[in-house]
Image 1 (cartoon, helix red, strand yellow):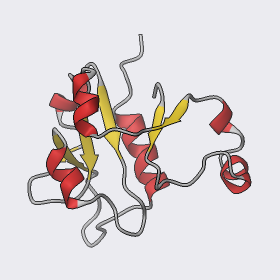
Image 2 (cartoon, rainbow, N blue to C red; image 1 turned 120 degrees about the vertical axis):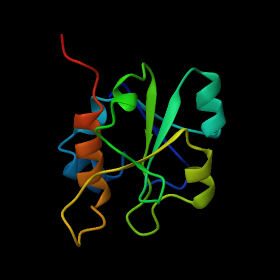
Image 3 (cartoon, helix red, strand yellow; image 1 turned 45 degrees about the horizontal axis):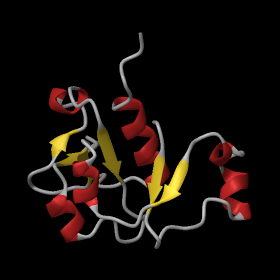
Length: 123
């Protein structure tokens, strides 16, 4: 993961609890507040992957995702997830396959799985 973009409705990554539970990792990864939209990421050459459960979502291990050279992973909050507009605007809608009867993970667990699976190939 090269950087984190936060919307203005995200929590402050420098608040005391965020620094503590991240064990200070917030200081090792570049981050910034994002003023634009997903289309602005597209103008910079990124494809977007919204992490959401929909009838049209693809599995996180779909090879098309690994072939993207610049992929922005879009995560929602734990309560509401991503808005319908954000999901509709994304290039891909991606799900994490789970055991029968389980339909969601908290955002930290989902991010960990997504970041591991979609990381750049190691040389």
